[in-house]
Length: 181
Image 1 (tube, one colour):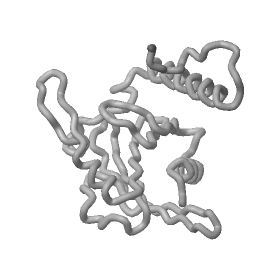
Image 2: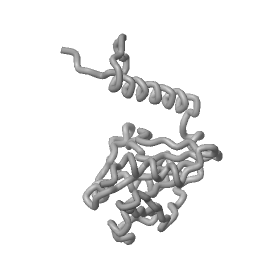
Image 3: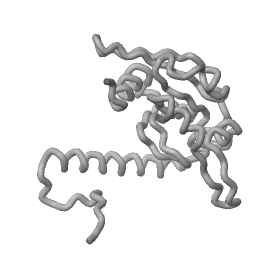
């Protein structure tokens, strides 16, 4: 069975241009974590949400957030569709034929994939391009310097995590988060 990490790798390897785009995986922004976030050279941002089961897909429409100022509760896709979202576009990445396209809101792009278990090749098909929900650059809505510092910290944390799994560190990893007794 194809693991989500393998799917992400296959997608970004075949669909993204690292010389022109910033590509992040599992990046927490705004109110949710983006499975894949792509920001192009002009600052156009595209979040891609991966769904591997119908139940996970349905649960995405139950996600909500509470406005800190007003206390009002909003559903995720209401927020995205009205343009009150940090990304310019939003798409679902799904196994081919898993969800009827009519169930996917018009503001969402649809990318389907087919994974051949014999050759281990994965092919991607853009079924519907996402609708641009607003014109603001990602960098108008985000502090670019803070974003870069957070990326650097994230890379350091992951490096320390991987290094700690493969070799004994002679100093305490400052990024280990453990409950104090």
